[in-house]
Image (cartoon, rainbow, N blue to C red; front, side):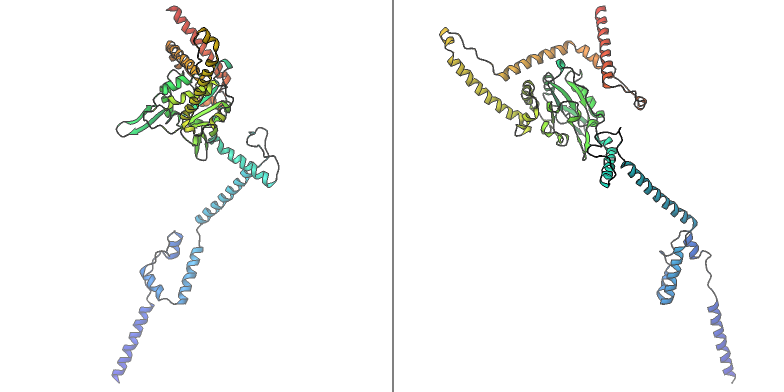
Length: 443
């Protein structure tokens, strides 16, 4: 009886102790999940091992309650987040409105002072097609400012007729007249092609020679000065800045030279440079520094071309099967003409009975191209003699101060025209000659 009462008392006290343990709450942190979420901490991406164990043992009801709590936490936004979202929405709205307004402005009707080339073949009107064409034309013109050459006419007007050369010869610089290469031992070294001095000096009596470099002015200007220090052979120099940039290539547009395109020949080593006017071009393989005489071989053809008063050089160039081998094919043509000419001379000599009866020698005529070449050699020698006599004067002219302009002049529109610049140069030339005469008198 006594033992059963003790057992009931012990059992009751054990249940009471278990209930007290269950009711005892575990200590919790002050930083709950809601506060951490507002502070920017992702409480969902890094669950603890304990939380993972509890979630794996939870039933379906507890899981659904947890998902609802997570969705509720996601929907909670701080005031800073709301301000950021509002600012982003305003930015997107303003950007869209600005783009729409800009498109409407570009699609407006043409104005009188706009470039005629832009509005060519696109009339005014408010149809969808015309609006789109005007928008596209104006939008493309923004980029053509950086793609087109800096001036519509890259060269000044041709000199008057007594001083005007019949043809214009455009020569590239790199890998045609010179070749530059870099080595670890010597750095950059530039080689001059064999015969380049004779080539330039001889053809300068027939052609207006324009040197059109494929490199920038800052790299090529000094080389050009070395080729022609007295500026006696090369009339003008153009550089990469004067090219047309199109389809990822720098193109030498001959239509921008301010010359009759039918009287312009360009010699280059790149297909990209001549892609706009291939019918005016002679493409040669790049020179890599080896010894050759290709420039000398070209002289007879260019001499013939300049002395025949040809109205258009393009049909003549098109008559050659391979423009890279013009010297060889031209020489074959000349030999055929020479053979026919000698036959004609023999026939004339055989029919001249009067000279035979009188015993007079038969005068043979010189082959016309040989006569032209002999005259060219005389003019070349006379030209070199003149340069040697006037070398001091030419050096002084080359060192004359050039026209310089500041950015302020460009902004204010104080840049003189080509006619005014030519007038100033003539005035400087007259002043220079006057000083030379005074120095001669004193001496």
